[in-house]
Amino acid sequence: RSEFPWADDLEAAASGIKAELLELLDLGARGGWSKVGEARAAQDGNIIAPGGEWRELVVFGAQGDDGAHDAANSQDSLPRTRALLEELLPNAVAMAKIGAGEIIFSALYPGTRLVPHCASSNNRLTCHLGLLCPSGPRIRVGEDWASWEEGKCMFFDDSFEHEVLHEGDAVRVVLLIRFWHPDLPPERYMPNLHEGMEQFNDMQRRRSVPPLSPSVSDLLAARRAAPAAMAPAARHAAGGVELQEALDAAVAGDDDLE
Image 1 (cartoon, rainbow, N blue to C red):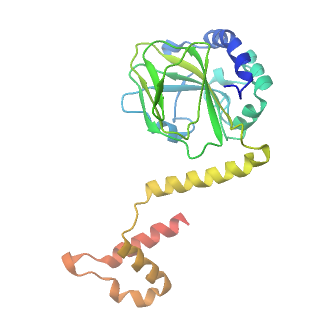
Image 2 (spheres, rainbow, N blue to C red):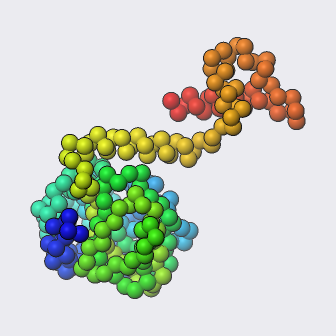
Image 3 (spheres, rainbow, N blue to C red):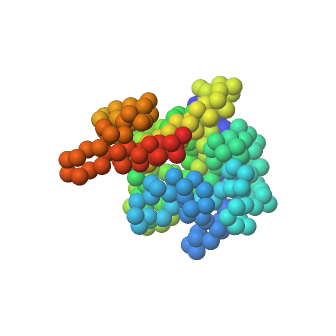
């Protein structure tokens, strides 16, 4: 926490941020809150266990996020909160606007579980400012469990495996802020962002395309080297399985990825 001198000012403003938020929204009616993963960041919706409810309100995001969901997200909303964040955390606001991070109100409803997950790198860190913090919700980062406190900041590195459980009976709301890791020099912000996106896309591709067995991989490599010579040898008679068809499908799928 000593590395984040802005935390004291953010905590000092917590009651004002909460008041401005509650003036704007009716949490009980879910009005103005988009389901996480529905309007943006689809991958985040995948970590909500069945039956759970996790909603968000974008304060600063990539172009198209601010004001994308309803009038509550417009540039004219939350003026004091937005002005404070622009003053205290200009780099985090800029990061959110280019799509490298986000600043949102995050509402987790009772009975929700966010399954274990982690980010692909630690280029950025996460801050949660507690605004509505009933008993029951808790978070695990690595091997450590913690709960939120109203008016207090919680910092963590989301490249460590983490999960969230809400075993209480009232909604939990935090102001979630992504910000650059303090050990990352500014000249590495964009290169590391692009490298991280490439790693993420590669990870998503690996998840969606099953790995080939060594024998099929060898045949596939040989087929690419000499497709005409492979045609007769690529048929597997046992069980009537046509390995050639499997190879053709694999090649087609692999070409689509390239």
